[in-house]
Image 1 (cartoon, rainbow, N blue to C red):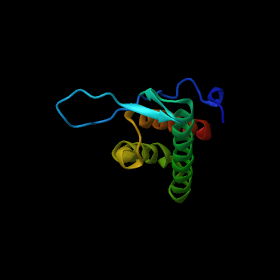
Image 2: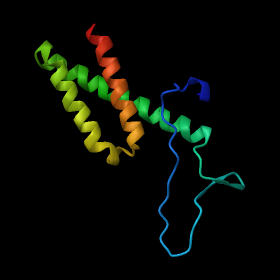
Image 3: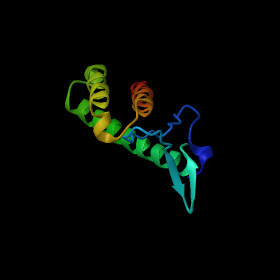
Length: 116
């Protein structure tokens, strides 16, 4: 996967770190033998994108399976429940708020495409 395959609307998340202590600290990322200022690397962004796409596919499959088990007009109600679970579980899944929003928006688009 290359950087060009990642859509423009996928968020760029700046890694943050919490380091206790009185003295100021600078968070850095080790790349090879170098230490670089904290910025999301292309590799990190590709990995985050792959994780979000995988989650999106799982959520879409779940929505489709549950919709087939229920009445066909329950799709919107079910979508709202899935979106609520994304908001609730984003910490457990390791998503940033921006990534959770991207997954939720992408899920809405995918569901709308399948309902048409």
